[in-house]
Image 1 (cartoon, rainbow, N blue to C red):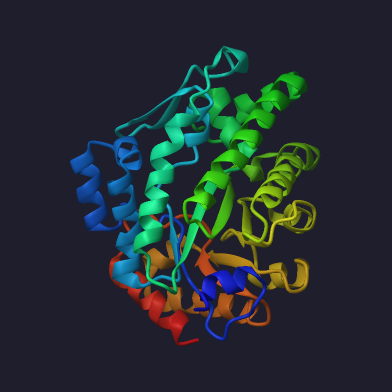
Image 2: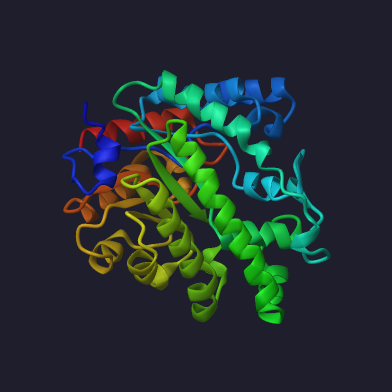
Length: 339
């Protein structure tokens, strides 16, 4: 049976673009909130294979999206590399010790921490409908490194940017360690039923062009090459949020099969600038989805028109927000499926 999303990522244009939404299993859904509260926090949920599989499947049952994306976190890789990981209430994730104050060599790797993720993958793969593509993911090295160095998220990634300028060899060692573990991690997801993967570079937009080449394009290209050697034929989506004018270089030089486009990018420009025939994913503004009504309808129509002549996966330009009305998601699905 042909899976529309998988076929699109392999370069086939569909009459109706397949659709999934970043963070589609999340806090805007009451069933997700209930299970997360029952488990006592996100890390407990993500490392319980049965619970992680359940929340991955919830939006598929509710909305019949073309793709199901594993519920996990990009910081599983630094956790496996030996940092302690926690999610404080209202504080976001924390990693310890921050590598601005410690060295990578002091960490004790614990790859077995990823085993519950692989078990969740296997559980999801057994339960998915036949036409639903199963997506795995990992964070890209630059974005993951910003958390590993600072120990937490930040608005401008300033601490990590300073580190990268001050000591490129030491920072390069961190990036290389992330890339190597990421190849293993994604290969493990694929071995347990994942059919395509996405690399999230959420903070790619904070770098200068030269640093972007060094810390975004090069490490992602290494991951793509390494994963393709181990798992040939599995589509890889690259999502460099904030790349802007650097997006075409990312698409050409990393070797990804498809590129995700964030909401700040004009879809008509993206279509004209990206390699001909390359599958594109995106790029509805999550706030337009919250607004609903005519604003949502017009934004959706513009994206559908811009990417009508190339393989297109309809998605948001970033993750769905917690205060998104479910009725607006239903209206969006109806409009895309009627295209």
